[in-house]
Amino acid sequence: MKTTRTYDHRSELDKYNNVKKVIVRVIGLNDSAVTLRAWAWASNFGEAFEMKCDLYESIKKRFDTEGISIPFPHRTMVFKESQLAQLKNDIQLNQ
Image (cartoon, rainbow, N blue to C red; front, side):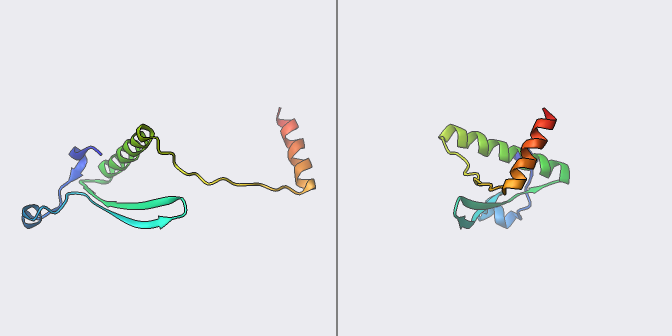
């Protein structure tokens, strides 16, 4: 995250007490995820959106570096015979 986009909302007392500028907490332990929530502030919506995108990109790059894969769900689709025939026809028509 680029800290230049982060708005420091802390009071002088918070700064004196070393309250972190960005607070991160674990809010869920799920089957295929550890869910985190980060509280950070920006001066406007545009900067907040860029900050979010930069954060996602840096997390993905770090995961790649560390060999961590994101556990996307896998789905098994079952077609009825009539649906399968229609699907095959549709594919042949589009080729």
